[in-house]
Length: 316
Image 1 (spheres, rainbow, N blue to C red):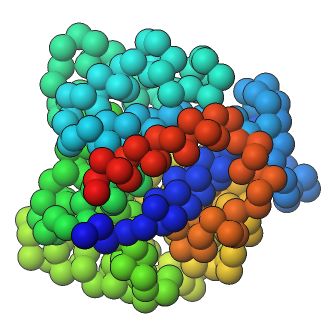
Image 2: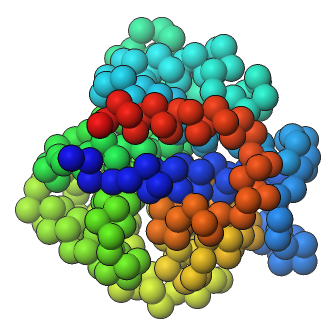
Image 3: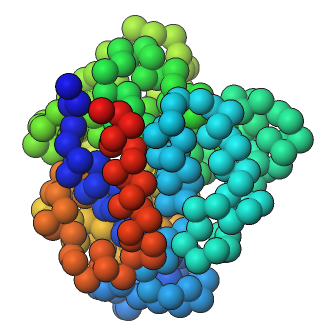
């Protein structure tokens, strides 16, 4: 028997894509600009001159993962879809790739040259952007019945296709564990506390990461994040910053629209912060809290809905 509903899957994925689309027009804008010109609705054009409702590589690669998982868990198939996205505009909103991260681009080039998926991502400390975090949310629905050791390994492998440093894997793991606690029906504070307990226990008993790497996530794995104020939160594209910002927005707002708009208005990597926060808030608050206007503006809404249904049916 499935342990999640179609409604939960839809609200998570649409919540993610709409957060992404809200952030696309103002990506790279500093917080000072957005404080003077806050985003309050779905905009168009801006940074990439795309129409309203356009999502970025964040959602494209999320849809690649969802499509791949609807058939089976196969890293080579997933890697092939990432290549197809860059080379053939697969799962793009309007038939062209208009944004790609440096680390992801390098990994796809390595895949094209025959590198195996788990070795394609760059491993240097400088390659710890949010490019694997932004696309990994659907994995939670696949991992529901897996033990935590298996969840860790799969998150690490899926992350490593583009981002092979342990820090990027840890970020994805923390995020997936939080989503799993939300899927269990816990209120958001309980889900956050349960995630921390589970992750801390796992990291204390399994030698998967050094103490110095775990400490990078100190704010997320202790009470610190709850007490942080906005000027302590960064909207930058660093994986730790993005996860902190997204979870902070989720914990400090009380509905879906305010969560994703707060994420966008933090500035800088606006689409990805709102993508990560949007998955959490969409799942938690449900489809009824996602404004119909935003949903109807979303590029390829019917195609996304069809993909979600196919994934759900394949996991029945």
